[in-house]
Image (tube, rainbow, N blue to C red; front, side, top):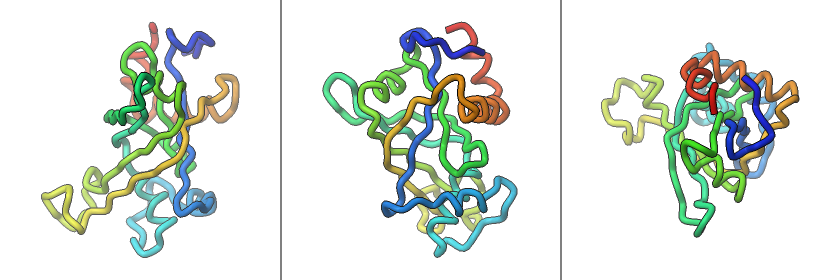
Length: 169
């Protein structure tokens, strides 16, 4: 799969820069691997990175490129072992990618409910079920970078349907 320079015709690989309390938690990201058990929720950085590393989808919110109306879209993602979500977006199949190119401000909301680790609750909004909204800016990855290759490999590993659906844009 080649990501073309013409963004209106090709899928786009983005990373969300995540800032929690305006701090960098890259050490927590390195410690949170997809096979780790649920950490103590009181350890905010580690728990947040764990939740990102364990999930596979969430709601990515961008600002509409015409009138800056908030727009949320359910998106598959992978963290590629970094603790930051990577998204594979297109500008031809939904507005999220185009919105991100025009204005990179975004938020991404995840729920622990997807993981089944919410103490057997049947309600995704239960206080026992962690939720997180990450705010920051989406960044277009350089298509020839190691980071883009790693992110794409992780996305296609975790979501094989993405490779097939975007192969002929």
